[in-house]
Length: 430
Image (cartoon, rainbow, N blue to C red; front, side, top):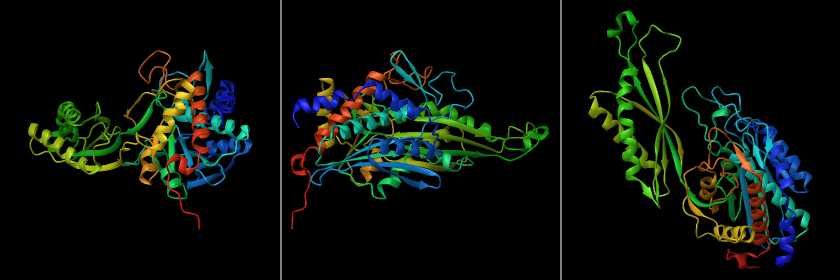
């Protein structure tokens, strides 16, 4: 394919079509655990484009949607992976009252607002627009384009009484896909990176720490044992430990973090009782040079610091999240070709870095699929760095369109080449 032909295909990707696709996805609520309606929508869109597709059930009532554009068998399989589930339903108490937290798209002044457009229905819409442009062009491909629109990616996790499908995220849809026929030579995950090329990213470990007490009515409170008061010593030490943890773990200019994100204790409906339990929940971020099996040692270091303040406190611990970091793919073929595709569209090379988010790239890499993250969202109306909590999820239509063009350029580049031309392994002909 010559440059003029490729340019005509790139120019066929319009902001109007990208916006239309993003709106259609955003307007279907798809909280983790309720992915069937959005999976059906994506199936309808793909089949309407003439792309072979099917729904893949990974739990009862929960589906991925898989599309495939078949090449002539002499090239690579290029996978585009994106999650369809979203972070909030829009009905949660205390959410800011702005369109960015609602599963209903609002288009205004060149921006799309709505729950999921940032993470990551914008990326999914860009996949769809790119695939449509390639199919409509009639280009004969040597390689295959595989499109995996997955559920169960959002970092929602089952712990204590929070159980069921709504609390099973962390990549369960992609894990099912790759363990049930999801074979590819390379992959792009469309997480919101502001069109940065993210070749590696952090992992996540979650731990519940519990103190226990003894019950007593308040009139004889001294006869009981207050679990909340015990946990106060942990709170007193936490900031010191968090600074220590971050200081000890640095990688390529990035630092690990640990945050205390939730607290539960006592019985709100029993005002006159000494609380006999208190849970706190921590999440550790792991840089690509850290290991999951080191995290129990970090927790013990933390609890040792607490006991130094107050001897004799006993703690129960439960690890309920173990998601590994994604190792460096900067030297992979997909990273190399993504740089080329970005330059074709944008005229410069993409910014690169280590992602401080988690994505399905880790699960893909566990099955030997080199995977990078590159997606449209992240630029904000206000100029806040990658995210503005007062506005919520929003996406520039210009960024959405340019990303769809970059994906199109990548598809045409990779899938117009033979495996030999890409430097991939081949099987000798008989």
